[in-house]
Length: 449
Image (cartoon, rainbow, N blue to C red; front, side, top):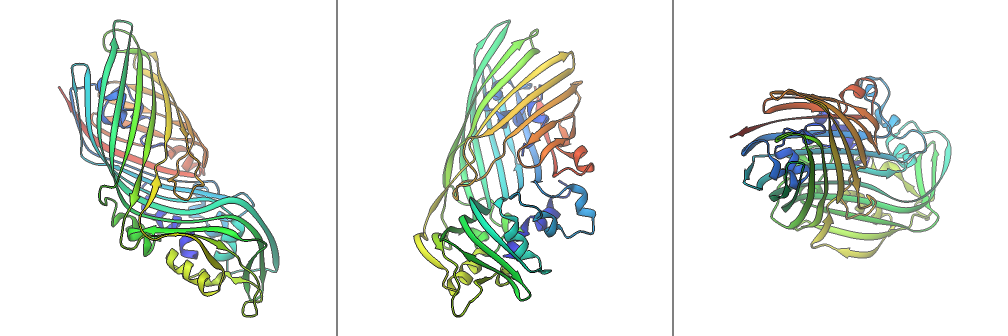
């Protein structure tokens, strides 16, 4: 369990050259596939008739405890992560946009996109439990726990293939209005979830170890499928099976409005989209999805309760499950070892791009999740608001995204585009100043005619 809790640090090694993906470039007035991924209505406004996306990569790590400078300090990162009383929240998120194609024809726009997604989350984890499991320097202490939230450790990988269509509905000298839709085929790869809710109990630390007892039964969900059934303590566990078999559908819908400034420019462009409306079903020979009641009490064999050191060398949720069963602390309340469904993180996105003077723009962007992260069958998302000033010289573009993230707080980044190549970060400036988000994205696309 210790390895599971600190998975984020192992993944951090992969992300170091790293959730608003592609911040700044995705709302550029040089409209391309990235704009269409954000809002399908944008496909009818492509800057060129054709665009090919060769690759797009975005990696992000965000948390509410550890600053970027802590990575180079001598302090144990686990100690920093589990300090204080505030629940630990961390998101590790990678998106890869693969070969994709878009075209504009008369008032229509079409897109074919491929994408791979990898995520690991810590949601509302009680720092006392994490510290008791990961810290071997125990002190004499008794801590009361009363956490009604669902504390989650979850990971998932899946692929998507999207088919988009958009049409300009109104177009005159003053303004235009477009609408679009994307139908995504989902290819679930692997999934793992540990969800512990309504934990009310006591952790007692003494010279022999740290022990947990509960005052009343808690609820525990353990689910896994694919390669994450064996382990999810390094990135290889996620990358082994990003694209599984077709087993889910989702929909994105969006609208776009432009207040024009001449034939090919605008004073204001605004867009609204609802994304990720759908779910996917995990099917695998090793599928497991069980709800338990967790009742940890003193017994003649375990006078002090559950010895948390038993989880130090555990690598996967099956082993966690076995430890609790062996001690007699688990009772099955609902079991489903066959197929189970996981919901995508439905998002409302709203943005407006303002032309300040020729070549200079400012974009406001809002991302609001429409489902709560605490559900065991829910992929997480984040609420984000950002403001991005940008200069666009045609061949060259540079932008400075400033965002407020519900997990990592305030972030300031920088990015640029040179023809079809782009490179940027949502947080490079605040990372150097000890921010709590590390992010990088890059890609290349070719537009013509």
